[in-house]
Length: 503
Image (cartoon, rainbow, N blue to C red):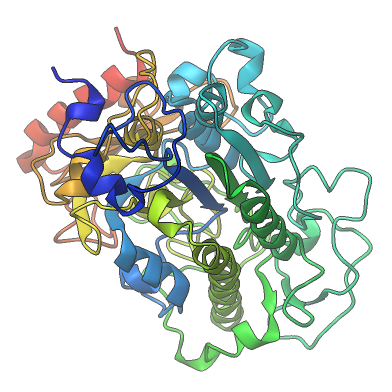
């Protein structure tokens, strides 16, 4: 097999626009267009969002989300239509993505486990870049909150300002919510923030920011990322930018709320006031209590529409902040030598089956994640990729694109072939797991080109779900108990059990 830098593409395709750049020492395996004119190694701008389901304009948003900057990024790169996270919760998903290992190997099955405890010698994605001559810095949330990984960064990590969701290091003993914010309950007028700033206090609140949101952590995350771009523009960099929105409470300046008419929002056809297990579904498929919104209470249709509107506003504000970062990259003339990645940590439910969170979901809505990769010179730029991919694949992809030494112990598959030919033959399923206690697997899901299957409990003892995504995209009909699909279920069950317990 050819080494990664000889597969599928040439350096002239990827870096030809900077062929006349000043000589800079290249990494082992870096691509060469003209060995007499060494060029600078490609940069990476790695952007993440928290709790953002595939609800973007470029993905055909069900609720009509307005995301012009992400839409433009998708036009400049490859939009992966069916990307799946490995765990529908922040810490396990991020630990898997950034270490290049599935959750069953990281042993991170909850939000309080640090992967470094069990694996102190693992090399993370940004750490690999750092060890090969890149400056690696971040602003905002990349790892989960206070579990940031110091080994990953060239300089002391910068939190990017206060957060208001209880996930960031700025929360602690300091006031978690900027004074400039105001909050309201759905159906009520504006009200002062409660003295209790815990997540429970926000379970049914909407936060409206003054101005452009300058007092909020995400605004500062964009500002700090812009500062990093300016500071490190003349050397190879891996700059990570992590926005916490649209994580609850849904938050944005008023003008982003004004983009949406609450009266025109149509609730999902399987909307329910409370978490509801539909007939024919295993009870383990739906948690009995929401984890993010409407905690401990039901949601009326009017309240649900207001919260959906706020979630959309939060997405649009995140898009606006991302736009500020990408505009600075362009102003500095760095786009032609920078790989831009945008990904979310997991999906989210907005009232589907009465669920208002991601936690516990092995449905498409909780596990499907937006992924856009814009790598200069790729022939697939401007197209969408219909193949099944995983967030786990980001690590080997960037490793290959930047010519870094191979890390044979990581999992996932490089997406470089799909960046060149988005419709290329690809037969790789996507897996997601779930744990209720942070120690034991309680469910495993697999997504193939034709099917979505999930089973719960050891050897599926607590039931299974099978969906035909083409005929039933909203997953309203469980086919797992239909004898006509017994052979399909047996085949997919074997895949999930092998994934959960590899030989």
